[in-house]
Length: 140
Image 1 (cartoon, one colour):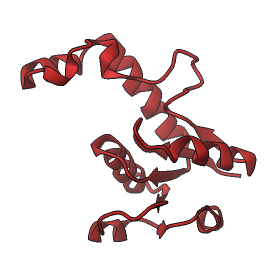
Image 2 (tube, rainbow, N blue to C red):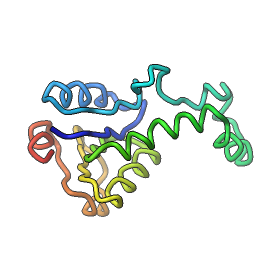
Image 3 (cartoon, rainbow, N blue to C red):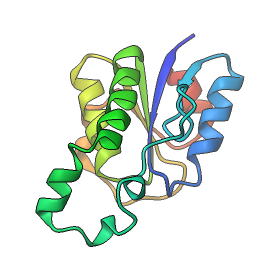
Image 4 (cartoon, one colour):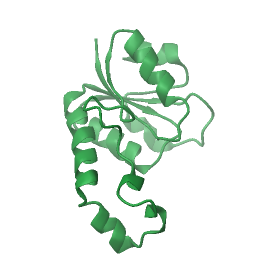
């Protein structure tokens, strides 16, 4: 069985279903929304409820906040632990950075597109691009 890092977005409605299905298939899965440390997943609002109005300087400072450090360490340790990454679309910059790092680290990386998205040529960098759960499971 695989050790899987699911990269996605808090706004992605498919992410919880993917985590549950992969676990049901017997895989070990890191869920950034519910990491094993039990303190919940990282959210900028935990640092500052007004984070969306930050200046660039405030954002740069926020990266050094202990909550951000702890959130990064949790996710990064899981990336080191995993042997496979599943990028579940739609998602944003962080998830794409995670998937790129995982592929660069030599880990199997699969893009899962459960609903139509704008085409992206550079997804050819990854091991597979799939649009259904059965193909995803087969590629793992």
